[in-house]
Image (cartoon, rainbow, N blue to C red):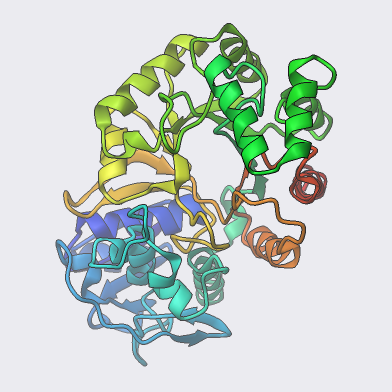
Length: 431
């Protein structure tokens, strides 16, 4: 066990140390404000304060973990052995940066509580982030800092060995959004006729022929690839997480009716083999009652409580959306990432509990951050090298690699995305 001496034990401090030391590194941690207790402790220990007590393992603390609320924070991003870091700790500190305050800033999404320029959907832009501005968005810096910290701790305490504690393993966890279960079938007479008119008006004759072939039973619907991918996951002994959009039809939500038996059977079938969650509709972002209705619909379909959610269009606004999830008793979220940019929005590849700065508490909502998402386009050239580089960084720290796909991307109409999905599954499912 690691004992931490500090002059004040705050919720922020407890949350951050528990996450970094225990959840990421697997080492139990305890705290004390009593000098005599710290001195008497004969195992691994460190102090976290403005000044060291003596010649102990000491990290000079930044003020962030002892404050409340939101305020302006000054930054000077430098490098710690080729890895960006901030909140320099000074010469007396055993490590050169206060990685605990820096990690809290990223994990809590502190910067998203500050004023920023939103995009057309009200989303936080990656370009607004500290990580983007200082070019460390594609690195899981929090996890790397933890590895550097534990290495120095081992070098300082001869009797301390991380092998004495449970070590986590690399995990590959693909996520598949289902915003539209079928491209053409089961869409109703009005929507089908509207689709035909749209094809003709836009001169999309190949789509017109594809639509006709599917509706006449001459070929399978291109988005109906669920059985094939379930078999693929069985082959590689890895299951995907499927998130179904079952909100009402609207400008941005175009799935078929949740009351159609074929859609209900599809969700039930997928839930028998994989973990299922709610892809919260665009409109539910501003209406918690709609979110409640959608959760109840999915509960009734799979006949068990629904605990996982993802926001459609990645309409993640803090702390509002997460408070809505907590109110409705969701326990897992998969929305922490950027819809159009590769990278680690919270600076980590490890699941973490949402810390509500407004209420200054650790909540029961576990956030599963992703680092890449289907961009909603039929790209022929994908940033495969950058994706593989991020995956390599995640493997080095034994983190969780979560890419976001759509069933749309996995269709025969989108070979580049389908090839990427299968190649990642082959490369990392048995890692």
